[in-house]
Length: 245
Image (cartoon, rainbow, N blue to C red; front, side, top):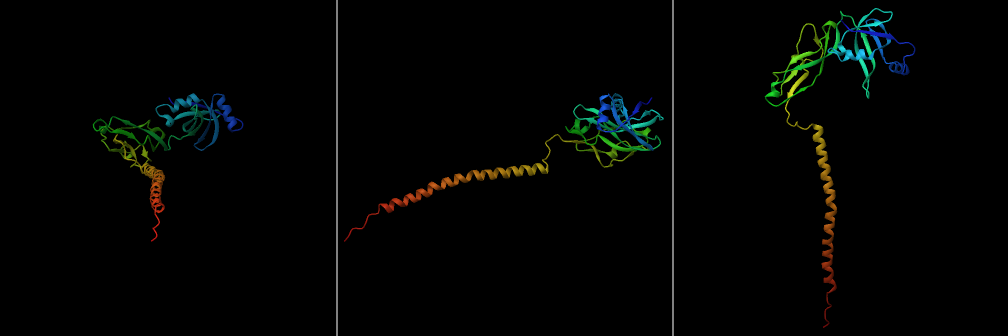
């Protein structure tokens, strides 16, 4: 039986202070829209919304939403905001849906098994795409898209085109997009930015070495000049006058 979310219409002004009062009262401010109806500002139970978001189908869960004075409608959670410090829900968007119209949704990709490239070659499995975007009818939205990666060898890739396909869903993500691959655990080659930074650091170190050496050269040259001058001085001073004939 689908979850039933009771949405109570909000009254008065719809500003930050009003939304804060809703949260202080233990509810979440929300907006319900879609399916040809005008948007309605409502408040809902945060525990119920959290239960839906953390369920197997998550934000793709289809539930019944009831608003006083209106017939129940099918809806989904299409957007939500959390307070960053306490990680509490502070606002959600609910969208009415029609069961006979296709939707664009993002679905989690679930990798099954241990790749042979990990077991036999010592690689590691790197999942690049956690979700893929698909188009399908609401009733056909899968909880996740599971794929077996046991045969994935070292340096091999799993792409969107390798995921299970059916007539019920259409992939909107690029077919050649990498979902996961097995990479080597050896140290990766430095990036261009890292190479450039290393070259700049080396040049700076070389310049500093030259600057530090200059006073030493000048200092070394001074005694030599003085010694040369001193060597000529005594010779001039001790020269005796020629005797008169």
